Length: 80
Image (cartoon, rainbow, N blue to C red; front, side):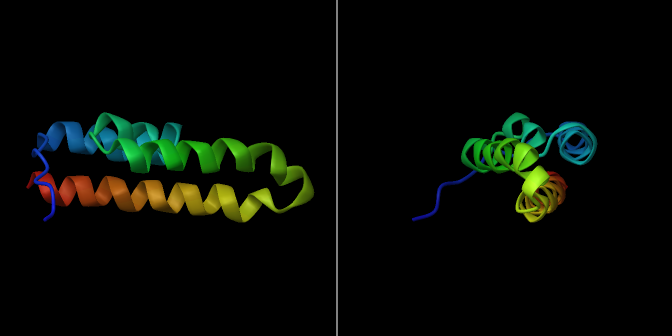
């Protein structure tokens, strides 16, 4: 059985999306009460940053950012 998530307000969902896009992927997810997704997005992003020097980190950082944007949009859709 799936857990029911509490809806967040639309303004909070917009804030989460903006944080995931501009500041850090995962930060908005954490604020939007998606702890596991947010933590994993942050971990992948932070590990990927130093690995950019050997080029393997580029897809990790881009992937974490895209995942953060998708999570932010999903939060926004749930709030409406």
